[in-house]
Length: 356
Ligand code: MN
Image (cartoon, rainbow, N blue to C red; front, top):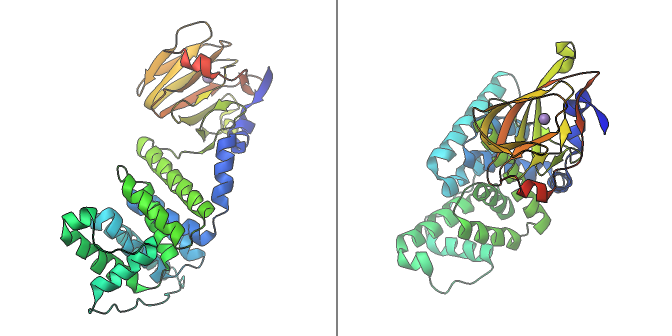
């Protein structure tokens, strides 16, 4: 049993992350700044997370992407997530560009789009598509044969009008498409075919995997933002948590005479704390999802949003998410002698499985 320094836990400890998070972080960090920008702009546009999009648009301009490159990503995305999401992205970008201009920031305008010839668009689009897929199409098949109108729109419009505008390479365009599709549900055939196209136009497999992970992080952050007024926070340490957990400090103990601290903990499905005790107890306010609280030797208590748990001092227990739901609680922890918790053993898979 080691005493636990709460400040260290809230401010630095959890940044260590669990092994899975660490691998994911390393993979994501291998992306170039430009690749990360394309992924995040595309994912947040598709998700409609405009506050996060605004941050990423500013970062992309700060890092040297041109205004026209970013416009081009947002224009292309209408083909994958609809005019409303694309237009909201463009409106957000317009406001970002105007604010920066007002503040005296000079951004690079960049290359102008190429003019696409009105003649032979179907053949031009078909040629582009064949380049993307690496396969020769003898005749439209599947949905394109069943509904020929979509075949014409896909080739003349998407793969001629849009892909023919230049500014972005096919690699960039497929990276954007894969990132947007990755955050949308029930479109597996399109996700799979665009992943193949991305690899085919030269996106390295490690880059594509990192992009998909990063898009997944954007989705998680968006979902957390939708269920909480507070940020998701940083990954929780595998020393004290099993599975994917994020911790956001809300009240620094230093500001409260070191008597207590307040933090939000977000558990992904199956994630949980280790067994632990609190020297003066703890209060949990459940804000979203479904989870469990269990004291050693007792049946687990099922928790849902709105539940309050008063944990007595020195009682060994754990808390965490159910098998299929994300679980978020705010923890108010009392501090004694500089410590708010004593961590014990992890809750094993067997112990976790026995909860219900
Ligand atoms: Mn606890």
